[in-house]
Amino acid sequence: MTGDPGDLKRHYLEEQSLANSKKDKYNRRRWSVPSRRAKGYAADRKARVHTYGPKEGKELTDFEAGIRSGYLQAQSDSAGLYKYKKALSEGKTKREAREISQKRGK
Image (cartoon, rainbow, N blue to C red; front, side, top):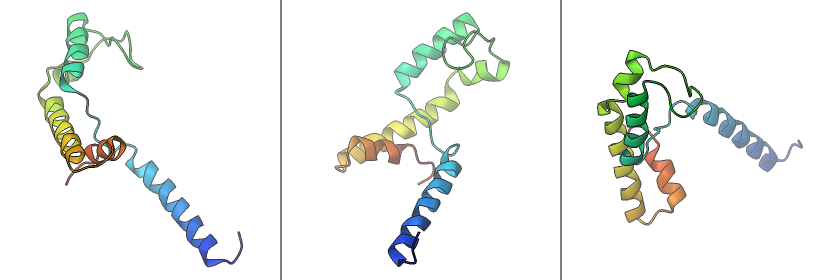
């Protein structure tokens, strides 16, 4: 790295980007099209085990079964889908719309 101000700024921005990506890893809204999530959750509840993902084959806890009843997850899905469609109608690309829909808060 030289003493060039552009070099320093680029390095700083790369560091900021890396720090933000680590911080945002757990702060992103994970939403799905509600009908797709419902099908997977219905299969999980019927089998009483995880039917997909890293916990596949493990028994559902009471908490996980409760989440799969749908109320809390449906709120997040509805909010994410609403934000996605709104961003698309404003002329954003699909990628930009997805990023907007996964942000929490306003």
